[in-house]
Image 1 (spheres, one colour):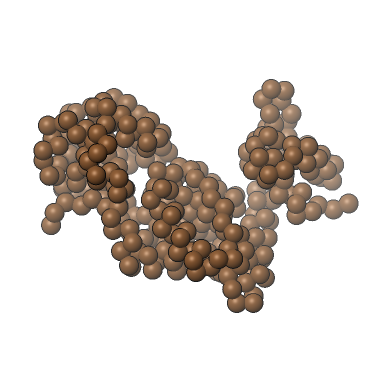
Image 2 (tube, rainbow, N blue to C red):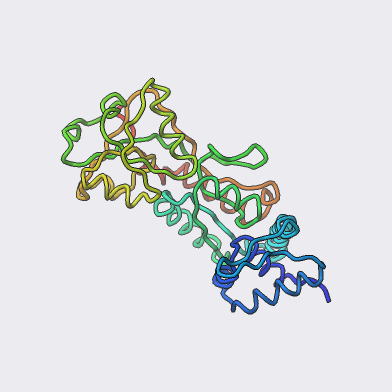
Length: 309
């Protein structure tokens, strides 16, 4: 008996999720199939890959953690090989696992995927959202092939193609007295209550904006949801700072208004991150080309809110 590709995919899902239930849901199969793949793999290897903990699920053993990195790398190479072989007849074919920084997903993914599916209809697309740090982990373990994210957390061992710089702006309750101003400075808002988007790597970035100006924000609420954040601002619990300004944010019909920030402020680069293994694959190259074209065409310009020159 030998390992099968299907078996390794099932074990990989269990190792990544730490749950037979979640692994079965992700792979769209029965829980018994996941359990059977784990049992068969452990029998072949002669070591346990998981600790079975009643009511708590499964936890990888030290051998399981080592297997996770090796299996993940192998499956990433297998997807690349599949893409190369299927694309040998000319058309770009295969499966693309695309990650996206969650707060930007509603604005970035439709524009990119619409162009991608129009030009390469035979590509199968699987999406995964996350914060900046989790996306790097997904790339390292081969869970995804590429990620739309900010450059801040991308290690030097990965590649990054910038698409634009996202200047931060202020989100204000429409009842705020500052809403009458066309643009704001950090000194205008530093003493006001702030609602912070508290995802991995976001809080250090937003606090650093103030620190560089010799200021400190007065944070009164934090949330990991950009939708909840907008709701709290609209309810007049405070202001917030974001980088991507969606078309609906500009309408002024949601209980909040958007105002550009003036002054010298760090504008993080947003783009497509990918690993060395994925660098020369037809599918990732197709995504890179489309992202570059859309950027040069100004397809994302309406997502920025910059002060008047």
